[in-house]
Amino acid sequence: DAGVTQSPTHLIKTRGQQVTLRCSPKSGHDTVSWYQQALGQGPQFIFQYYEEEERQRGNFPDRFSGHQFPNYSSELNVNALWLGDSALYLCASSSRDYDTDTQYFGPGTRLTVL
Amino acid sequence: AQKITQTQPGMFVQEKEAVTLDCTYDTSDQSYGLFWYKQPSSGEMIFLIYQGSYDEQNATEGRYSLNFQKARKSANLVISASQLGDSAMYFCAMRRPISSGSARQLTFGSGTQLTVLP
Image (cartoon, rainbow over all chains, first blue to last red):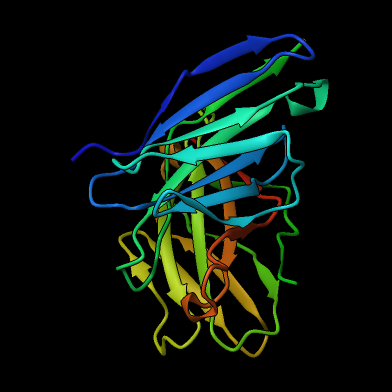
């Protein structure tokens, strides 16, 4: 049973560029959440996708956008990158059918903005 | 708003001993979920244990147990018989009730770095 996968593992961009991160959820899961984790801090919620719609959004600007596909995989797009976007981006999947709604995380994508 | 507080930035424990990692939370919800995750230096967040606010018994998963004291709003993680592989960052997290609809995101604390000494 494959877990949550993310690509790429590492990414280096320059200020002003755009980036797309990808996530495939755990088998049987229909919900994908994205988190940003700055160095030395806990993850911060960006948004969550369910049934191909953004269901909830954290305190992040519109430069952060996403998409969910019919196979439940998801993309996170960040436009106009700036230095402060350097972080570990974590994708988590879960199922709304499960009582605990536990989120399982992928290995993350480490983004460096120069 | 929900808040998670982890007051121990770093902890040391001798191999084979037990260790308790502290977590306190603040919420106005009557129903909520509490989670502990382990994050090794590789970065992946590994789910360890879950406690529902209405669960009468403390959750246990192998060497992990959750000391849940609802009145004190604390949810401490106890790791028994520590192993060298337990060295990692540990995060406490909270989720609002599922019945609240779309409010399913996790709110994390700042984490505790655990080092197991040989």
